[in-house]
Image (cartoon, rainbow, N blue to C red; front, side, top):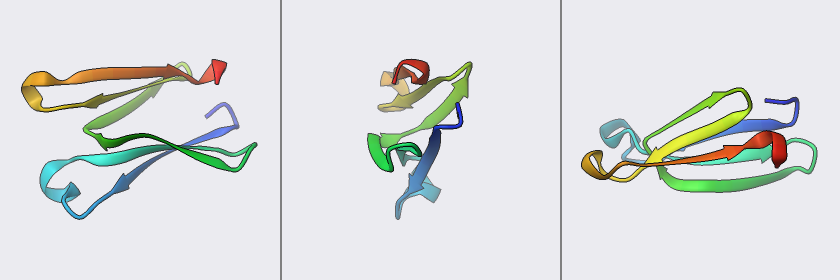
Length: 70
């Protein structure tokens, strides 16, 4: 994304059963990986904005980051 970032969903031992995975962003230019969330239910990208959901089904919280400003 933006020729700078790789979005990574890192599965854990319960991912198949729960659908929850860790959300990481790898910055290609700096070589650093940032853990955005240890428990993400879904992640999406559009127009260089990354957004993801956390929480239980009845208490879902949405988060976002504009990667153009990162």
